[in-house]
Length: 325
Image 1 (cartoon, rainbow, N blue to C red):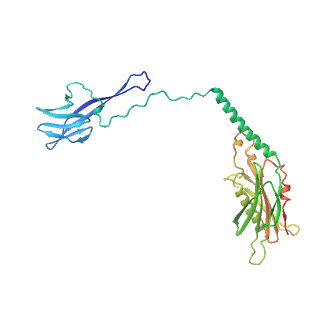
Image 2 (cartoon, rainbow, N blue to C red; image 1 turned 120 degrees about the horizontal axis):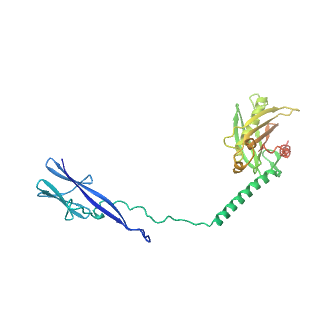
């Protein structure tokens, strides 16, 4: 049974920030003391929590903070004394020491930190940024307008010489399509913002009849496998979400067997595209692949170039392959 409740006013004062002319701030709160009778046994709760007390006669003694507290019987009522002061006699305010968990101090009210940057310095930084971006943009367009510098490369393992626009990067890639698997050996070179060029060769699988795969469908599949390998290697040029539109054909003129492929692919986006006035169709790549069978090997030339540069002379690349027979 609840017998009585007392509210003890408390106060905490915070000094003004150093160097501030503001007056100190005070926070007022209350501590709640409740007295309960549980089947003739008295219990004391402070702010809803039961506290340990010592019972002497008709007095209950306990502590709040550094203050000694007494609840004493007064005829048919109970009185609470805190630090010798009777609560309810007069509005007494106790300092923060009465708090077992004092409230946190308010946020520091010092003036926020401000960094003053002269407007001229900001303008200079913007000019440098614009000039740097413009220089890179002009350099890209200039490099794109320059024809590639072809150089002769040779492969002893592949048994060929060819023309590539730079130092070749060698790799091996295994591709499968339509029950045909080829292990393609590639030597490729990239021209910045212009294209990807690759020479690929593969030993052809011998069929059960002892012949090489030479049917039209198989020849077209060979070109498609080579194109897939070249597109996968041109990671900086071809968009990762690109779904190439390719058309492959078999060739069989003059007793020579081979294949060719033409199509387009989506180019990876660049920063310059956002300020470019070109249409989205200009952001595509032209894919051209030519292959021929020499002996029991397939030799392929694959070029992936900017579609907006139809005047680019690719003859040195496509005509530059010579197989050592």
